Length: 318
Image 1 (cartoon, rainbow, N blue to C red):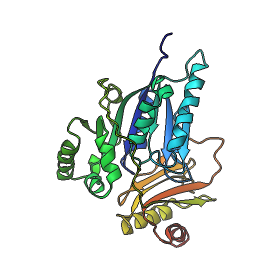
Image 2: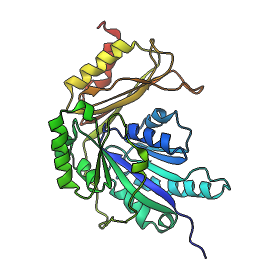
Image 3: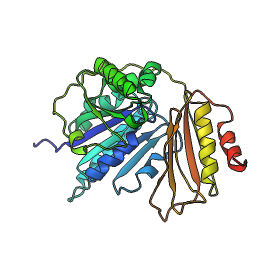
Image 4: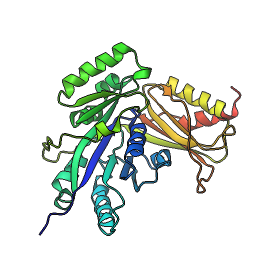
């Protein structure tokens, strides 16, 4: 009996706000025949909205991270994806890209792909790509063991946000990464500007040595969602978010969402992390758009009155 054809899988990891979604958009522009599995921490998934310019098979696992409560949902999802692929004469995709939550340790994902016999015979793990921010990566690695675990499993490290960092910051981060992951390739990228073909060409050697299953350490991460039912003033929202990021730079690890503003005819992608609010980008409009803005805030511990602070900034003159 012939062995089944194996579908290549690439895992995209990296801590909150390090540029995973920007890089994923870049990869999909180069390799549109890809199925995507997105794992989001929090009950309100928004990352699929940030990929709306790509018409690809897309699955979302939300409510936790793949290293904890969502872990059990990955196996049936990949089985269903494979059976859907197998049932079609014209195959709908050539590879699978799994984007883990920014707080996830990639090891349980590797464990699922390599130890589960049905999956391991039908999927081939090509490699792990991890994004690291030059502006905040050293501090993040010092504070969060989840970020260190991501680095440890990386085949390729993408150093992002070099335009937001001093040269010395970038040099120090590279030196740190060389100590933590000497075998991983290191590539610098600005705004996801990188040759995707180089990322999809892995050496083909299986270097993964999984340990016995160990419980994941508890974390203090919290997710809060703000929904706004009517278009907002972009200048006021921008000022409110910048003030929030400035006052809680260490604790507010990530904000992201899609908002509808009085100044734009199309929905706006809003993202920020580590004290920075990134320039907004317009997204393609869809007939299914409901006009409701949704912002997700991921924090280290809870920030009291977070959503109320943003709302008050929308009605208070700035």
